[in-house]
Amino acid sequence: MCCRLLQKTRLRHMNSIVIRDSLRNELAKQMRIEEQMREKRKQQKMEIEKLNNMINHAEVSAAEELLT
Image (cartoon, rainbow, N blue to C red; front, side):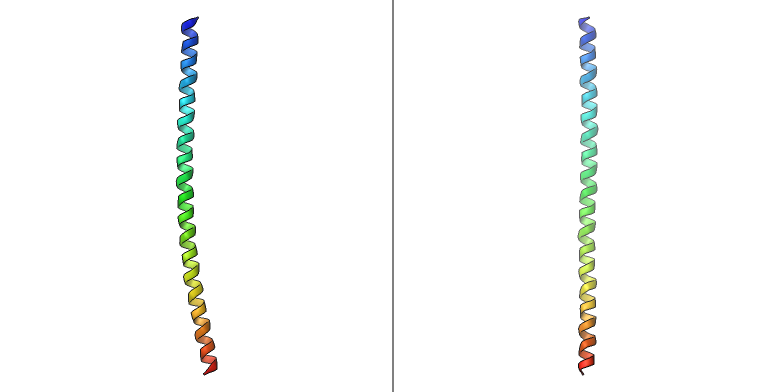
């Protein structure tokens, strides 16, 4: 009886460890994905700023041509 209870407790404990490790791995994976998305968003913002500057420069140039 005692050995069976101990065995059952150990099994539950091992299952808990497996679940904990699985959750830790999933959390690490999600954090990596989040960081990649953050970096991609940052790059997209920089690209938008670059294109916006190009458009502004073209508009200023076009306006200057109209005035001359």
